[in-house]
Image (cartoon, rainbow, N blue to C red; front, side, top):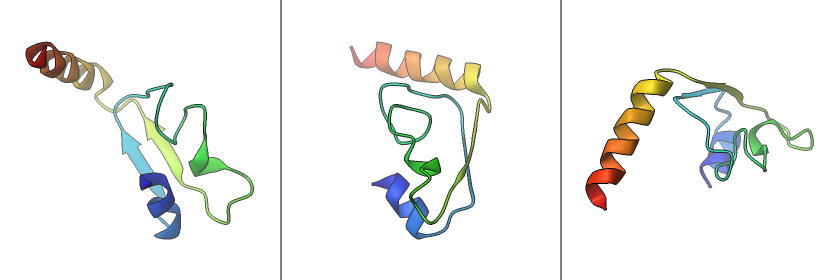
Length: 65
């Protein structure tokens, strides 16, 4: 749903920390944001503060368990 909203809103670029190859619409099994049949493509940049983000997520979920 978020990817569809980005395409409809003509968002030009998305920047995020780390990929999840099992989920999401960017750099996963779907590749919605760069699909050639859509009339708009979103530039995808990942890896910004990836290690810090990974540490925060691991800590968060460890505390939840």
